[in-house]
Image (tube, rainbow, N blue to C red; front, side):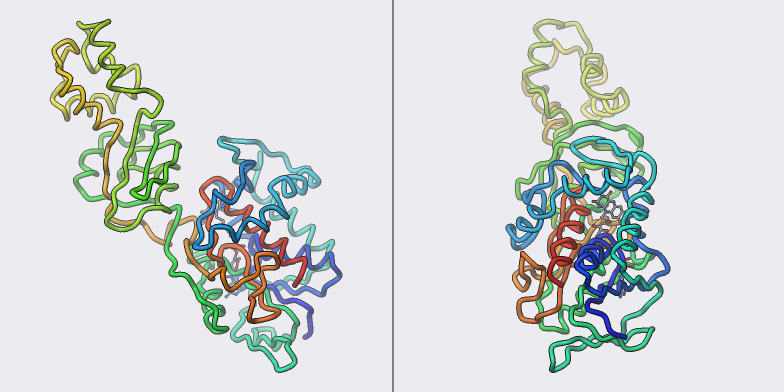
Length: 395
Ligand code: FDA
């Protein structure tokens, strides 16, 4: 079998690359080892796929090579993807913070990509295993697959990262990079629930279900996110915690400010003047959910306290527990529940224009397998679309 391009991995990046290469009249084979196309698209965004973010820009991405993603994000932007979604008359809405979701189902995005693949005459083979890839002396590649040998000019690795292995995620892309002498930056789970020691779980167990929106969460390196937080039976969770997990390293603490929009100490001091007879917990109900306030005043042994009776020092201690609450996670839930992998194929080895390996002409890496990881909120799909689109112009 001969093709111009073989793309391995029919996820977001692989589908986009296949469409673009097919439009250039390249003979494209897209192979997928599971029996499903775009499975992570289907399960994303709670089944509605947060397919991009109107605020997509390089500073929303982590990489050892901070500027690598700039070119691709500029050449195929969130607005280009939104145009495609509109062309297919898929209804969508902005949920929060620029995040765009399908109104109905993530399957609309998969069907859109499959329709574009059909129009571009892409051949898609599911349940196809690639056992070996090697480069011939004439520059072409031979792939040993479960369909037999396939010969092609370009190979695009779009196999994603290791999160959620039970739906087909593999480390295949890293293995191929190493085989061709390309460095792989050590990888780990990102956008992942953090785990906590039993003492925090004991503290928070009665608070399960309480949400605070927004909070500020800060990593030791100084990265700050303003997002919602949720108390759960597993400790603390929600978008704020997922976001900071990508910036957290084992042993480090994170700092939570549950009231980022006021100066709590000043507010309490003013209340002491204006409503001296008020109980502390009654006043705090103006600011935070009742169950949380109860826990905070009980913990500080202030459940019976009138604000007039509290010294500056007591108020200071009470307020710092709320605006500078330091928590040290014990770990993360890892790839079983992570949304993305941090690290991956070293971008220094790749062209930021074409995604081609500098020292291996014809070999391309796109999407999550590459050391580019977005924040929560549609940024990871945008990277998959942008990098896939770029490789599709050249492969
Ligand atoms: P992707 O993982 O999509 O595709 C890789 C494909 O390669 C898969 O089909 C896989 O089966 C296949 N493959 C792997 N090994 C292979 C091999 N050896 N041979 C052949 N095929 C192989 N992002 C976002 O922006 N908005 C969101 O709402 C969400 N939500 C979300 C929810 C959940 C639960 C997860 C796990 C992840 C998200 N993400 C997200 C992240 C997003 O899904 C992710 O960044 C992209 O899917 C990455 O696209 P890729 O095409 O690179 O990999």
